[in-house]
Image 1 (tube, rainbow, N blue to C red):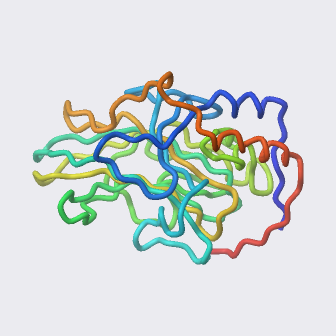
Image 2 (cartoon, rainbow, N blue to C red):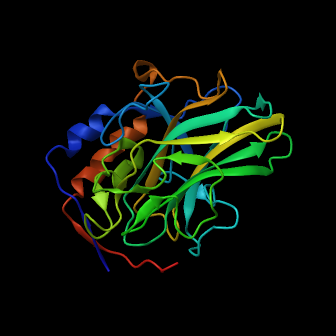
Length: 270
């Protein structure tokens, strides 16, 4: 099967304007590639607590780092990333909300995915699966097909991928690329709102993750922001002016230089 790179004269400029780093708020924990970013490429400022955002990406992820329990993947080389926020308390009836934007360069039905869970802060047990987003060449990408049903209310309720919308510095050398061609599942969901009503008082954390399903090529990422429980902010606003450009961003030129080149890579169907 042949994969091709999208070509555009604007690629360098789009990659250059983004800035991201591994800096996260105190009390957060991360596995793989997670940090803060500024609007660039297809990821605009979030609807709340912008203009910056937080992200997780399979680019630079670790083996099994972003897998959703019970979903996983079949490839031994699969990888991903996840991040867990600091603990927060909530009462019965409190409303938890946040925004997310899933971007993937891996289409054609190979089921890379993103997700979020509400966890018990003491036991780390799952309290609720809040959303899923998954690569698909046809139909909706949110909620993710073949995955457990999310407990949160999503707005929009279902989302089709924005075909070809893959320019985002968080994807590293996969930014601006697509498995096979435009229209085959590569793109972005745009910002989606997740809302969940707490059913039991307690101490909780939020977990966000992204997973490469069968291998480590053609990455996916997810931006998130605006998380709050009642009037308490869980994801502090990110100031893009305070987000330094990491040294790893200098390596993106290697990915840009490969644009227009055709690759042959086999991927096991899930």
